[in-house]
Image 1 (spheres, rainbow over the protein chains, first blue to last red):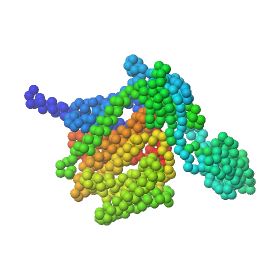
Image 2 (image 1 turned 90 degrees about the vertical axis):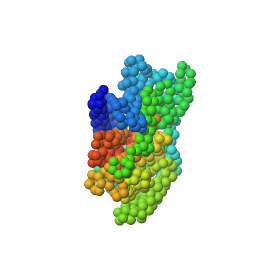
Image 3 (image 1 turned 120 degrees about the vertical axis):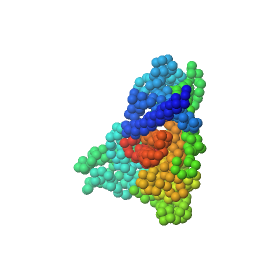
Image 4 (image 1 turned 180 degrees about the vertical axis):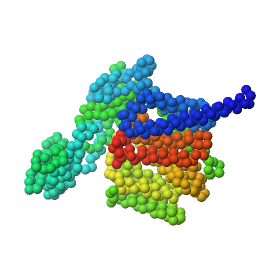
Length: 361
Length: 265
């Protein structure tokens, strides 16, 4: 090869590298723009969009750019930290793709994998199951390769620092979960009169007993006044009840109410949840192989699945809902996390490129 | 806008007052007095952070009020770091940024204490949020340099490198923090919810901001990329816009409710 051929080859390589960089820039800024657009869709629709065929093509394009950068970019190859960052991004993308439900479906159809990708399991204490269902818990999606027995489930609470019983005025408004109460607390001592926010009505507190904050069932006697009309009513007193409603519109039919649900309410605040704990035993071939507590942030890992504390029956704590998901590709993505994080730290903190004169580059 | 007539509130206002005074002193060419006043503001802001943390029983990073309180307290050491280690000017405007950041904590956001929900009880909580907070301050300082660059002011402050280099150094320090914040958040998401990535609006805005800064470095790697300083400054500003939207809009606008809604004020 003569010198001219050699120069030509070098020039072609440089042109290729510059084009690669330009295409990568298009990919980076394009993905940034798509991410912004996706943020307007909401999580559910964004998830569908980012798994669409169009986005799959873009993910592959980015994967190719990263691969080409690792192989052909002299700038990336020259600096190990930069190389590690790019390899980290590639591994994260590849690991996430490998861990996706679509790829899992292909793996199953080619006989490379078995079992459902993910699913939910509702368990009562003492129950054993290997059946995963969809999010509505109504459709069976497949069995786990092992069973889980729920030994115990509990919800831990923070102590309540204030009186758990709250007297308020409220209306119902539509929400995503159906109609929901919007409550304004009423601060009122015995003998005091307060204005209710609805229907030009005032309330005089006549008595409240018992006064102990720990009481499960206070009795509040009040007088509701509108103009010259006044009615006397009592709220509370039934053991075991945690919500009392006194609708205002039937009491004052002539009153002008912007919302017919306007009521005086007495409700018991639930103490804030500290943790959800499901103590489970993993059963394989009718033998107990692992015993552990699953908590939020502390999933159980066994047999190719991560199992999470998802939700529960909050009212009575009769059952827990666990979420199981395949772990394939997780170690690939984790390796990518480490490489990207370490690479960025070394590249920018330990080996920063600074002009020798400390001035303009 | 509500005044907080509490010990915590007065500490925040004291920090804000010192920051504002420090800015005035810097502008009046009294750098020594400005630095000492700035340091006093820092002590007041950290006293507020300590007071809040002591009351809360956990590092105060749970909601917008606490995040802005911490941001306001972080400015002084990072200003000193930027001047002494990165050799970057513009320290005079930092107290004003600290004042602006403390304002929502002092007057806008609800300071009511709330117990830590189960998802936030993780060893990754503090590193994830702190990495982001640190990156946000460096990116804010880079955005200030970028704005000055685009406004056509002097190319460099006396004794310091030019603005393009300052922007590069600041983003160079902030970007790994942002990367760590993103990665720790993804790992935490895997532990808490079963997925690294849930396509939550806040996640997507943070990804967009990270990509813009990643694009900034790639742009500089283009042939003659460094000679287009204005484009680099524009990217620094666009990236910081993404940061502000990630931090504020997503949490404040009900339109973008998602998995990070617990951070709402």
